[in-house]
Amino acid sequence: MSQSLQVLLEHAESQRDAARSALQQAEQALQQLTAQCEQLQAYRGEYLARGPGLDGRAAPMALLRCHRDFLQRLDQALGQLQGQHQTTALRVEELRRALLAQETRVASVKKLMERREAEVQRGAARAEQRRSDEAALRQRRDGGPLARLWHSDAQPATY
Image (cartoon, rainbow, N blue to C red; front, side, top):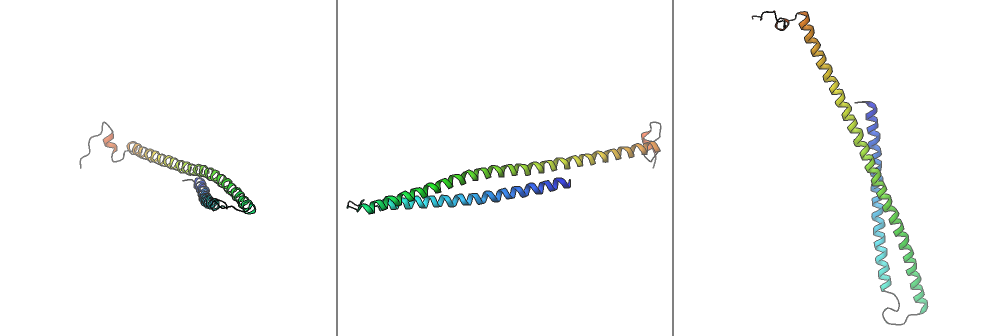
C-alpha cells in the first residue's frame, strides 16, 4: 500500500471525524432551541390564560396595556427563537450533507487502496508464474532431472 494513499486516508478520516463532531454539536444546539421554543410557547399560553379581565371582572387599562406589551415581547422573543431554530435546522442539514460527502470520500480512498493492493497481488502472482515458467524452461533446456520426461525421444527413468 502506498504511503501517500495512507496519508490521504488518514486526512479524509480526520475530516470526516471533524464533520461528524460539528454535526453532533449542531444537533445538540437544535435540540436545545427546540426545547426553548416549546418552553416559551407553553409559558406564553399560560400567561395568556392568566390575562387580566378574562375571569369576567373589569381590569384597569394600565394592567391590560402591560399585559399586552409583555405578550408582544414574548411573541418577539418567540419569533427570534424560531428564526434561530430554522437557521440551525438548515445548518444541521448542511452538515449532514458535508458528513455524507466526507464518508463517501473515505470509502472512495479505501476502495482505491483495495484496488491498488489487488493490482500489486496480481502483479506478484504474474511474476511468480513467470519465474516458475522460466525455471521449468531452463530445466527442460539444461537437461535437469525432469528434462528426460519432456523430450519425446527420452526413455522413462527407472528407479
